[in-house]
Length: 238
Image (cartoon, rainbow, N blue to C red; front, side):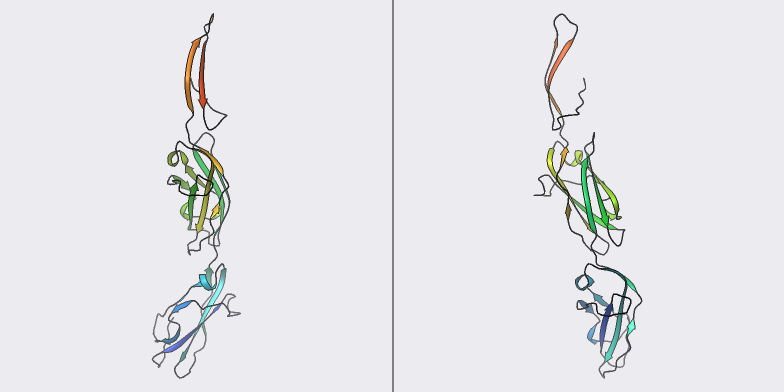
């Protein structure tokens, strides 16, 4: 804003409305800059309002601010109102996390829902645990999809984790993933964790192979031992 006066300093007062100027009772205690007493008149003055402190968890499209100046001789200007502006201090919300290893693959597909008043440029952070959520130190560098920066809000967002690269030769039944979203105004949602799920990137093992031709026959019987974390649906090639 600009303020001019013959006095060397003025007092600048601020009010904030969340209903297009019908009422002016929004808390504005967390303000800094060219507001209050002893403001030197000039152009391009600035006031910073910590809306996340005074007006947290809100999304409004008809916010307004108004200013007035009082000089040292108690001459008071009119109120000068801004036009409507949008304000977002509401956190993005993640829900319905579901991680599943794809059959016939070591990929894990994580689906989730993401909602926010500003639907684009959302940062989604991922952590993975192999001990039911006690620690979150599993490598997750091999991920693609709706993770990282520039994620768009929506239902059924997906992340694909290449567990065969980051978590090879493992078989765990108490894996978990957790997600947290931060929008473009740095509103950060809660950490949301999945329930336990299983991951198997461990190779099946064949051992103790023995081949014997049966007596009075052209048949050869092959015996072997087979171990794997998955007890069914294995493919054995000869």
